[in-house]
Length: 146
Length: 85
Image (cartoon, each protein chain N blue to C red):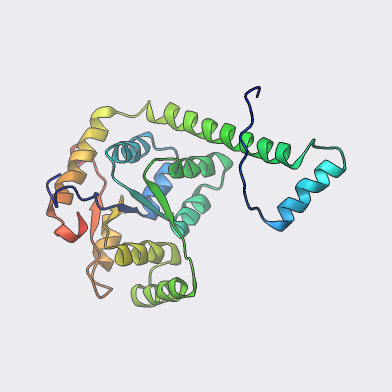
């Protein structure tokens, strides 16, 4: 670990694009999630992003793949737990103009000070400065494909 | 399962407890414990099925491509402020 010695690694917040790829059974992205988990990197699953991924695929098979994410050792769902979080989400929607599921990803990343793991970096580049603190993101891509 | 049962104390939703008791009263289950045992067994089987499916899919992944994506992620991570690494 190159950063603070002995500290647990920061989680990645998975966005809709990443979860859609998993719901569609993309073996590379699923293997990547599994590899990150195997390395002890916690993965945060905003529940509204899971909803969006399920809506995209609309099949029991896809839902099972999404449920499989929760079976990874270090994966955890991020709910909209209470009134305070619901109102904070509304604030992010209002400030960013994002869909509720994308805004939930942004809200979770902002509150937890974690980077977003995404296949859609353009979206987060566009909205990186919308909140008080900069939203950081990490792009999933194979450099050999570009 | 032939092994000795473990005794545990759990709290469940009143409606689910009532449903389990109805199953027992109508002879559809031997006991509330049997209902809970059966539900947990189904959950275990479901999780196993999902894990198998994940394994079947991820085994087909191009390892080289995944390694390159991991390296790309790691390179970006090193550029993040320490608060986000």
